[in-house]
Image (cartoon, rainbow, N blue to C red):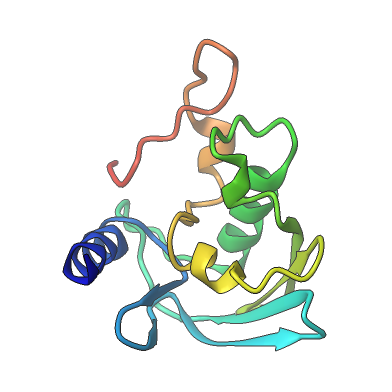
Length: 142
C-alpha cells in the first residue's frame, strides 16, 4: 500500500503545482520553508524561479489567488473537505504567503501537499466556464 501511495504522490507531485510533497520525509517543492503560527496559520516562503507548464513564473500572488478562490463558498470545488479548513490566504511579502485556518487543523500540511494544486492567478478569470458558470480549469495542461 505504501508503494502505491508513494507512486501516486510522486506522479501527482510532478504533474500538478503543489507547495510540498511528502515522501519519506517532507520535501519542499514550491516553497523553501514553512512554519506554523499559533496553530491556526501556516506561513510559506515561495521558491523563486518555479515555472508553470505555460512558462509563467509562479508567485505568491498565484498561491494566494488559488487558495482564496478554491476556499470560497461559490468556487464550484467538488470536494469541499479538501479546502473547508481554509479561512483565507494573504500575501505578506514578495515571496511569503500566510494561510489562515478556520480552526486548528493538524492535517493542513497533508492537504497542502496533496490535493491543493496551485494555478496561475489569471486562469480563474480567463478559463472557460462549465455549464454551471464555474471555471473549467484544464488540469496540468496548456
